[in-house]
Image 1: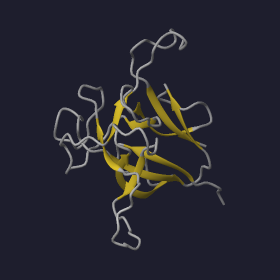
Image 2 (image 1 turned 90 degrees about the vertical axis):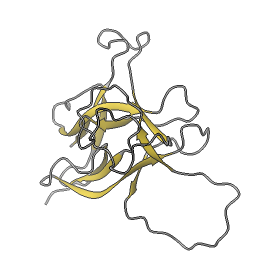
Image 3 (image 1 turned 180 degrees about the vertical axis):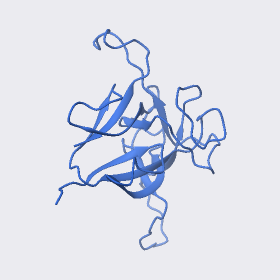
Length: 191
């Protein structure tokens, strides 16, 4: 008997790492608060492909928040493209997969690493992303898979929630070991 069930979102992919130790809970569409909004949520969502709706009362709320789909904002970035049919991720819509590590109870995203620390199992690695520093809204950091996929239907510049890569800035962040202006990697680990 194994105690496990660590949950994580694999940003930029429609599948989990493998079928032996992980299971796909659902595939979805990345979304979040529009990049120009100063209110709303600060985290990205993995919205399922099969939404279910509550009762509709026919009236529109006066005050509400909203959820937008997400796009890659990375015109020239060192990702290994999967299934995009183009040379850039820019403006393509972002898929996601919610995964469960069957035999592991803890999950941890480690920034600036491509491999897990000793005793931890690597689920996937990639590049650290978040919203753009000059936009009004704030986003949590997300680890975008190093070999991202795109959603077939979405490649227009419709904006919404946006993913940008993250660079290190020297000063209070020590350089070395960090390098000023270098894109930060990330890894998602379970134990």
